Image (cartoon, rainbow, N blue to C red; front, side, top):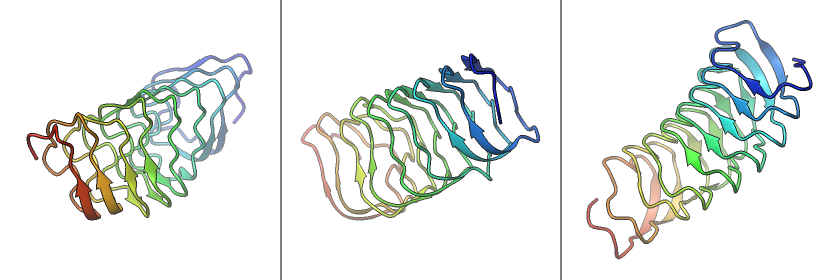
Length: 193
C-alpha cells in the first residue's frame, strides 16, 4: 500500500477492521503507529522504516494473516500493549537494541519462532503475559529484566538453562510455566517465587 511520502504518524484506528490486505510498506518519515491502527486487517507483511520509534497499543492486534519475520529498526523504542497479539509470525524474533518498553501482552499468541529470544538490555521490567503462548525453539536471555508481570513467558517452550538476573526480588505466578527449562540460576537478591 502506498502512503504519502511525507507522512509522519499513522493515527488511532486509522485502518481498523478494514479490508486492507497484502504487503504494508511504511514511508521513511513515519515515527509512530497509533493504537489499533491496523488491528483486525488481513495485511500479510510489514516493512518498517528506519525512523520508527513507537508501535502503540494493539497496532497490529488480531492480524492473523500477518506472517513471516519482522525486521524492527534500531530506532524503535516502544512496543506497547497487545501490539502484535494474535498474529501468525514466524522466523526469528529479534528485538532492537534501543527498545526501552515492552507492554503487557505485546506478543501474546503472536507466532512460532526459531532461535533464542534476547530481551534488549534497556528493558528492566515486563508487565505481564508479554510473550504468553508464543512458541520458541531456543533459549531465553533476560539480560537486565528484574521485574516481571504474571505469566510473561507461559507456554513458550524455551529450552535449556535460565539465568534470572541479579536485582530480581520476586517472580510472580506462572511467569515461566509451560517451558522446558533444564536448570535455573537464581540471583542472591531473590526473596519470593
